[in-house]
Length: 356
Image 1 (cartoon, one colour):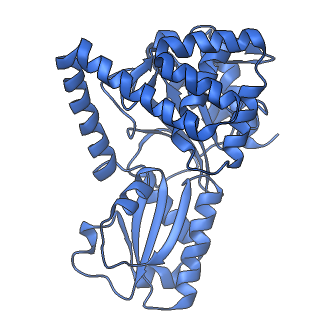
Image 2: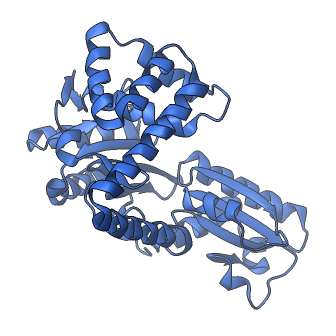
């Protein structure tokens, strides 16, 4: 097995040895092969011992660093996500771990931590969340990601729903009726019949109805929570970004642009970033597209003939011409990664790692 596979198996085994309840939330069919991203439902009160288990795994499976990110912090437990990363610095790769304590829609609670942790299923050597909770989440995701085209991901989700037996469908209907009212139930039947267009509309209506009901039942608390959530989103978008926006001074030399492309590909292939783009500096240094891309673990590298005195106001990192000339793509990638890690809290560091 690979380093990531051994680590995932080790982490989940540690949890079971210490009687820590958990449920893998998605993509568990090939465990311990999960790509680079593991989503786990857990209790917020268990995070200290969970962090200890992650530190043990970092040492046991030869990772260079274990870090914790504050990107998804919230004062509300059901919205708070504890985010950790294990880094292999030499190979520019990471294992990303999210620990969730509830389910939200537009920032409002759909499943509490207690509800999310109910009915955990043992599957061979690991545990998952209940089938009903898994498919409630799947329905909400379909409502969010469908944009008129059935992508591979959407087809996979649809197949999962259609594979449910009669009893499983009944349990899911009851849960969706409780959480998303009659509009949600109608959307579920439309998903079963692959009428995605109407299903998405009804999922949206169900979410809006939930917001309206929350405002009617607890107007002051809802407004206060909405304000808090807005502040969290603004902080994530403008201050504590998950990704990076970088300016590189290439002076129109094609070889330097090629180095940037190679470096960005290494970083995205290793899941350091979800996506990476290298593009010419636009006229508008700040745009919604750029903010959204950087917010979602994106690496945006823009190149220019020169660096202005105000460039640092718009970029997280500046790569000057002298650095690009003397560095290869691996070294450029390491420079970018080091800057990113500098914004995270290091929990564990291998004795061989000196300058982090």
